[in-house]
Amino acid sequence: MLLDFDPDIVGIASQPFWLFWTTAEGKARSHTPDYFARLVDGSALLLDVRAADRIKPRDRAAFDATAEACVALGWRYEVAGASPEVLLANVRWLAGYRHPRHMRDTVAVALRAGFATPVGLLDGAEEVGDPIAVLPVLFHLLWLGDLHAELDRPLHPEVLVTAATVGS
Picture (tube, rainbow, N blue to C red):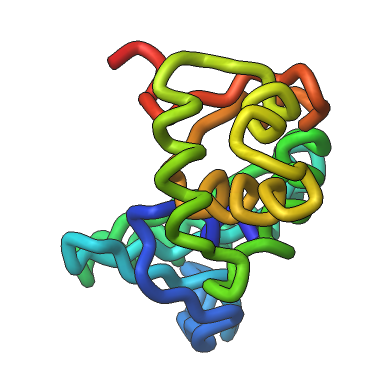
């Protein structure tokens, strides 16, 4: 889900292929990477997801072989650990608002203007209109990255939302 949320990623494939090789001991091995992602700039990312404390020596050998293959192809390779639960929960919530049906242009314009400086989520939504009508658009804009909030903290009525990237 985090790959889908990343604006630099334009395409994703789950378990995209099998990689086969022979170990130094002459044994046949194979590995299926977890994800392939195509990035906006045309480059590629191959990703395996495994918590560091769950990587056994056999896994490490498979990841090393996969990294070698990626070097040969000019792809980036990463082994990602478990993502923070709060971040995953927030992104899962926002994913429910990814569809364009949640966009209402007049509301979106008002939300972008209303969050030009950081404002609490619910206060900003109420300034624009009825929260029942405004919140789906607000969540859609958060999904798109047009609005920003710290997603490593639970989304709640007081979480600060801004139209500007923090630090810019």
